[in-house]
Length: 106
Image (cartoon, rainbow, N blue to C red; front, side):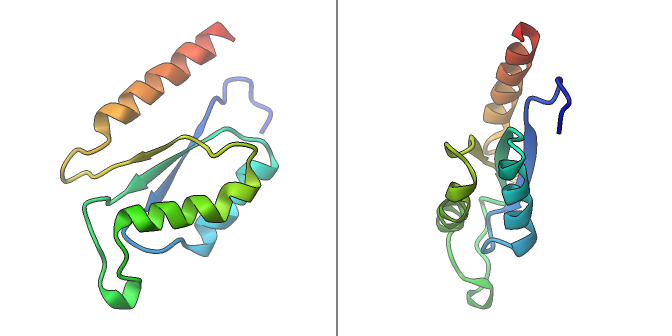
């Protein structure tokens, strides 16, 4: 928690399913401890069957953000990704470069 080199924790969330309790608990813990966080939503190319919620990844992402908004003063940065389509790859690399630059300046 007190590491000066910690500029962000990447929390990977499966966007193809509704929010899991453990993901919400971890996001809550990070927020309560003021640990900077970046949400990485994975599997954004998939949609699970009705029995698993049946929502589009965008809907699950929005639901997750609404559930954690009370844990943070501002919504953490977030990136939607897919290993199949490479969606979000460039955004993650850019975000990591920005975090590195921030760390080098401070």
